[in-house]
Length: 132
Image 1 (cartoon, rainbow, N blue to C red):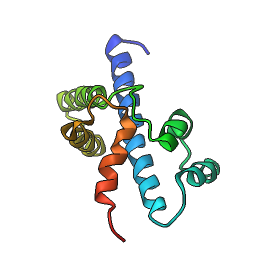
Image 2: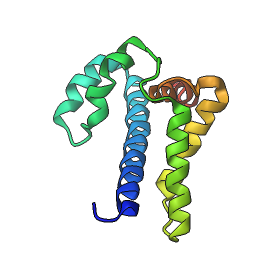
Image 3: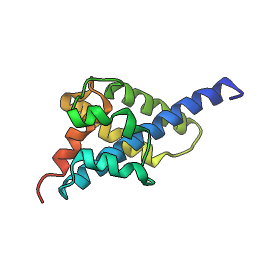
Image 4: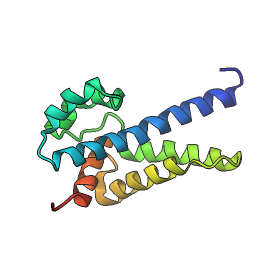
């Protein structure tokens, strides 16, 4: 990695990208279930698409069981995202998608889900996807 600053920046940005990916992944899951596809069928079928990512395997069972016990709590995700945004501010490098992602995690924490796993974002996304 070279300098320690580079190693820290690497950890921050890879975590940030992963947490933003989790948000989009859960958002897509909410979208497709509104069309009647089960979460289980979606998780199986999407493995052969460009959308496939780490979260499909890492949280597959927890999503199907709606098990929100934390592997990595939302409040820790917020901490990491805020460190990334502060670092970006210090080098004058805007990260608009990371800024948007952190707002969803903050909403989830504000609803009392801060000690739950990141997949608890599903609860927030369901609120916004009501009706049809």
